Image 1: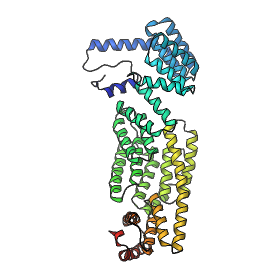
Image 2: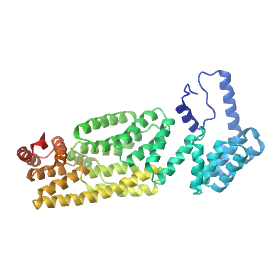
Image 3: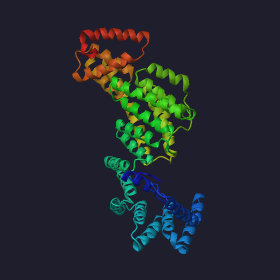
Image 4: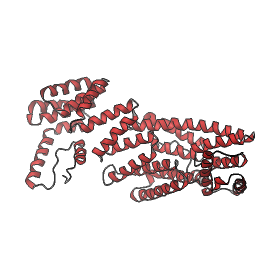
Length: 450
């Protein structure tokens, strides 16, 4: 029952396959008529539903055949259930023949959709896509057909087309949370963390007061904001991180924090790291967290790997990368987009680590050989990859203080590094070295401190 008759609301309802849909205001006689109709249908097909619930699919198919044979009032609905059961049992050839017979008898969009799905499952992709494209023009099958088209684009590596279709679908049916999550995953796959953060913000809002409301919606939103903050200058970063703190406060008030204690701790570590407080972040990891083999969610493992990487603990980072690999091998509940995202991030992580090792070694060697111009260039590349690492920031400023003169681009990077160090909590010796470095920069390159 709803007062909503907007197109996107109706599309969303169609996806849920309700027994009926009544617009407000409605009369009691109308409600009674619809309720009686729905109950009669449930009673006529109760053995099908019960067998399906008990995972006795062969018996469910048998009961469908009995209803189709004996009860013409519910024949179409029983046929629809039978087709879905055949697909669920991976009887794709039988499903194609069954749906095709229905289409020949009566042109029903849901039966055509069944044919398309059966063709796709038999790897007859070209035939299936032609049919899906045709069904995308029909209101009853538009959403599901576009969903399958997006999936095929994604599998073929056409990420942009998949993203565009899913973005359109989330506007047509905004309350489909799994699809919104898929869209966010694809955005993160493209390293568009700003868009992903907006989508997760929308998920938090839409899921509230529904069965999809969960602490993980908030956690994913916070993770995206932190990832996006890493890409911005300190002032913008500080504003974003303030929003993360509010988000986590709201999360703890609404949900039991015990089951997600590890996730919350890792996020706090990442917050400190992004703020340039690497020392405090390391202390927090050392105080509260020991490396373990717990059965963490894949997203949690990835976030933990990032936290250890950002604090310079490569051993801890690789520990959770290895856990992530194990999780991906058995996590059959993951969607294709989520699996590809996590695998891509894992590979990117390993490549980045090797790249940073090489860059840091080259920069340090150049500095030791008094090739300060080259050292500046190499430390700039390192800092671009890890813009929250105070050690790299410090090394960059030291190299600039001894170089003949950095480029305009290098000065811009050095300014960001200086702002990071101003916010970082350094030890007494490091603070003294930084003060000496700043005095040198005032004479040789004051624009870095502007």
